[in-house]
Amino acid sequence: LYSARTSVPVPRHSAAAGELTLAGELRPISQMIRRARTAQEMGFKSLVGPAGADGQLNENLISVSTINAAISKMFQKPS
Image (tube, rainbow, N blue to C red; front, side):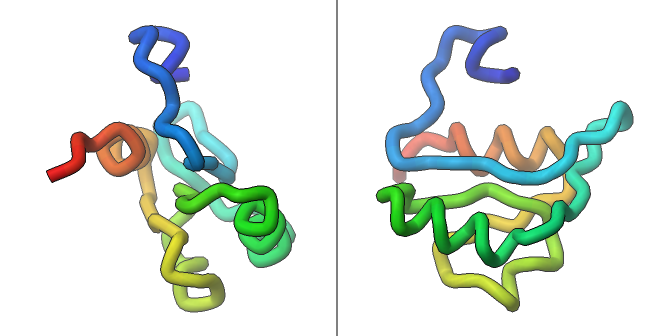
């Protein structure tokens, strides 16, 4: 949604998964571990997803709890 609204492309090799509520919260989804593995197998280097799943997954998962946090993490400028 952010990319479409701002015309800023989603960073290459990045993916996102989760359920977005009307309040802007990111909720867990089923099969998160499987989705993360599949994303990694497909060449994605980072996956932005709901908080709480990071202990079950790999170091490439970026855990967030809101859409604002997801945008900040996904579209941050490299240092």
